Image (tube, rainbow, N blue to C red):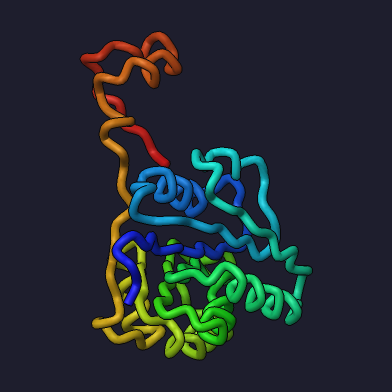
Length: 206
């Protein structure tokens, strides 16, 4: 039994820590989860940019596996060794480019393994590429919990990847209403002067 003071270590695995929506969500998650309850490590299959500096805590270790382009089977040996070394309680992979990390996670003895689906690749926008589908189905037994970021992705996991609904926890991407609100003067100051009237209804797209 773990001592009551034990803080679970979450190992977040992604392709590269750089500018992007998935990466921004990861950084926000790390920065907002209470430090007295969780620890974090970020494992990049390739490397990271200065986006890494957006992580507030110096206690968060960021590791690079320096995966080579194409097939690089040695990277999974390096990942297995790293997981054995840091001994995380939770492994959280994100998107197809990190899904294969589930196997080293299993072999390293990680007890809780999660996979997040944040969106589809540009060369597979409808999620029907048979190679990608078969790869996801192949790794399906290794994943204990799926976390799709939309209802559409949840339905796709169920229908196309054949994931049991009992293994899915669908979570919507959200907006921090304390940071982005109608009374925040800073965003208004960035707009052209003709759009700064607080009485105007502004509609933006992402």
